[in-house]
Length: 109
Length: 118
Image (cartoon, each protein chain N blue to C red):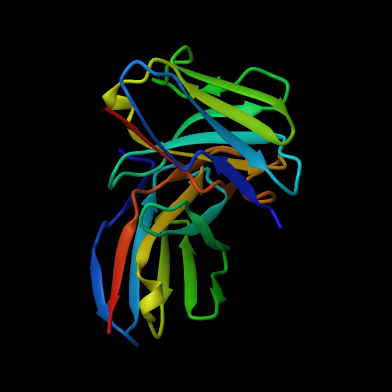
């Protein structure tokens, strides 16, 4: 079983729509969770950390469910610029990270 | 702040060539640097962890004699792909952190090196 699994998508949504997707992780001892954004042929960029109580950053909301070992990301009022691959990232131990293969989101005009 | 520069951004070489990739932290001291490889439509796979002044720690399945890592200073780590072959063609990305647990010190990524071996 992969350490981090994501639905690859793609999720094709119109501008202004809400899109949400999950990822699951296998290591129950994981303590740090992140969503990164990766544009085509570019490096990953940190979108947001995910906290136990859930957190919001503008149009982005992240949730963590430790019991079921999944993390979700919701994007409200989608913009064309939100088109990217979203990587779910979980720590393997104190400082190493495991990356999911990414969920591709395409926002169309 | 927290800028990581990677060079070169794109390399095309003949099979058998050795290729050196540099990863620099420009505005902070990176105690730990990580080297990842990403094949198309796949996740980033950690290759090795590099701590300044000590030998790199390689992940299972990664040949340390094939992928030489040097972390000679707190701002520079290098990855040398020795005698590269077409199957080594990939996107290589470094990241740097000031150390500590992942939830305290995020990793800052370089902009990646696309390696193509003909």
